[in-house]
Amino acid sequence: MKAYFILGFLIISFFSCKSEKKSIDVFSELNPKSVKYNYTVDRVSSQPVDFVEAANKSIDAVVHVKNTSVISDDFSYLDYFYGRNRSPQNRIGTGSGVIVSPDGFIITNNHVIEDATKIEVTTNDNIRYEAKLVGTDPYTDIAVLKIQTKKSLPYLYFGNSDNTKIGEWVLAIGNPFNLNSTVTAGIISAKSRDLNKLDRRNQSFIQTDAAVNQGNSGGALVNLNGELIGINTAITTISGGFEGYSFAVPSNIARKVFEDIIEFGTNQKGMLGVQGFAISPEFEEFINENNIQQTEGFYVSKVLENMGAFNAGIKEGDILVSVDDIKIKKFSDLTGYLESKRPGDMVNIGYIRNDIKNFLKVKLEKTKTVQFLNMTLSNLTKKEKVDLKIKNGLKVVESGEFLKGQIENNSILIDINGDAIDAVDQVLQIEPESVKWITYINPNGEKIRLRF
View 1 (tube, rainbow, N blue to C red):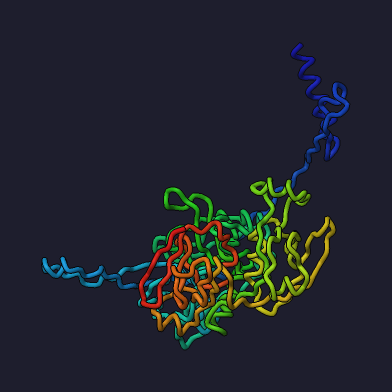
View 2: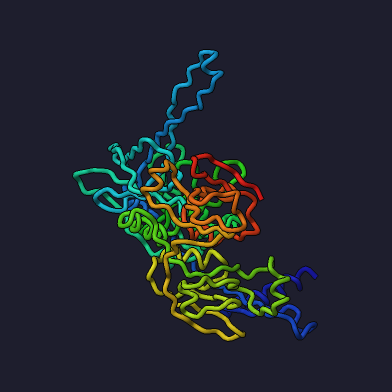
């Protein structure tokens, strides 16, 4: 019996090896509907990935950023009574930055230099500079620094983050735990990643599995050509250390914010002028009630008057399915792409109406005021923020009927549900029903929290 088994095995092996590809049909005689599985015999091993060239191109353009801020406790009557002296103390924070021009402009994260009274930058050849903060955008977590130098500095070219692919090899370069010039490798695990869908922020991160830890923030994410495709910003962790998931602001967003800060002093946002939600199982009841056939896209629940979408002809009930060459599967696909655009830019919107796909050219607009909770809100100028000694906020132009008597006109709205507010287009992405509290400063300078 054993001999027959061996002979049968050899016969099967002989016929299997005669062809490069063989179709396995194990149950064909027993089940005529069985599935055929194909396999390849002559697999060719892939060439090893070489990270050396990309690392050499990039490592000298990534710097160590040291942030010194002064913190002091409030001096109370009891401190005076007991003779306690609470002197201000320095707090030191560290991170990374990326040189993006030979004359010393550097991109980093806003949270790396937040509240800084002094910023120092150390290059990879151990030269230390005092850096000037050019500008910052807390919303995208991007900040721009400038160092003065007479020599031409090594810098990174921007790559096109829209062209990155899931599965593509990348390098993360930074200074984790003050370990300067550290390079780690991984692949792009996902794109347009929103870490918190409930906060309605325009997050659209590149997700990778390249190791990133404390101190990597503001560092470079580069492709194998040594091009900058992202600014490393965050990790998802339970332990506090790297657990396999890191996130970077796409280079197209970082570059646009960088250029806006250099030219205008602030991020210039191009708005489509719609409100709504991404179609997903969470809205199953609404989808069924409205007989929506699409399983992906952005459902338009409101079109803002005199904005680009309104002027182009977008209507409530339309489902946006693409913007230029970007397919809209989730909210962050749409908002992430629009973050790389400016007021006045034209985008080609693909949408579904009455089960028919159409296209419209839409001009993006800059929103100056917005209606929220019946309040009329407007952006603050940089001078107004300096005069008011605040870093963020929106002016309450008109409190409206809903909050009349509770919030005075010319108050400053500074946060919603604890999230800092600094641009009217942020408010457009917040559902009024989700508001639990707001914090504002009244015209007398008093900070007040109003709960709903």
